[in-house]
Image (cartoon, rainbow, N blue to C red; front, side, top):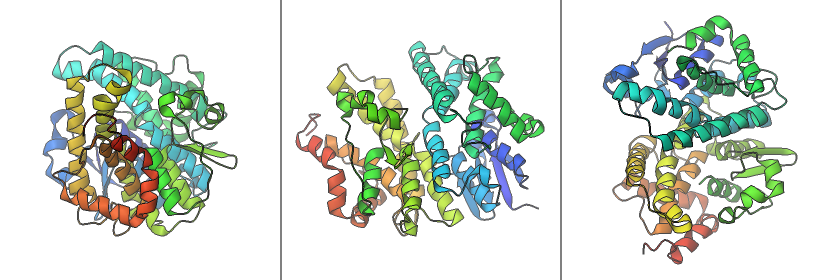
Length: 431
């Protein structure tokens, strides 16, 4: 019997992406069904031991357990020696796939899955009428995401990673196929995406495809550049002045016009987690930053996959809505939105305290890794408002001190000059 157990419900788009790879790679495994509609993800004891977030998908490979779909996909490619095209060893090709995966969660996934959940799923399951403002916002996210996929990620390429299918295609296609449940063509007006879906189906095999179709990033990159002493030229952009939308050079580098982004010669890359991994590989940084060991690397990927829609959303979303938007754009914060984001923030801190940092000095183990950089730069934003982000979290309190010591206080302070400036000016009147 296989040692690999796959916890799934095919209602989950990320679970379907993992199932596609398991099928295409002919990886033997045992399925453990967790019925989301019946609340089994909250009650199933075996699943609770495997996945502290109680979100699908998750796997156990012997004693090694992992959640977050993108980290699972990478792990399966490496551990089971799947063909190179799924997740190449070439640094630049791998970085471009990571670029998509870093972008996916807060863009295409948010625009597709959240829109469908708010418009169709929630009204059926819990009643009520969809919020038109929320739907309009998500429709905008959905359109921008499709535009990016059509005109950037698939531009002049058959698949997201190039001429052959890769794990990024699996993540993306499973967001589109959920529209079929409500008889909507997700590709209307997007001929390149329409052809790509056909190509993915052909590459996977129709039988496998049908089965699985059921049911403060910039500072993090700055910390690594400083700690590793990587020579580079800075190209500053004043976000508050809208320079990211106007700067022609930046627009050629980054189609999303969001920071951070890098150019290394002719090779350009956005999405902070993909940049961090690329820098480690390209500049042969010490092993602890992003280990070559498959399981250690997968656990770091687990954090990075979780980060964007959890700690980042809970912290950055909350601070923006409560302090930044009212200060610079006027208006009064929406109390319901703040309450929602406070809940996300608390759950995220609980996870960081009791799971990611449990019995470890850093997220990746005894030494600092790129996941620590992503995490700490979210929490230090609170310092601008004279707020202690660690109150009630002794493990996080110590971890922040350990990260500062591992980076070096001089480098840490240099990267946080803007944060300190906002704090010292009492910009948000919270002192």
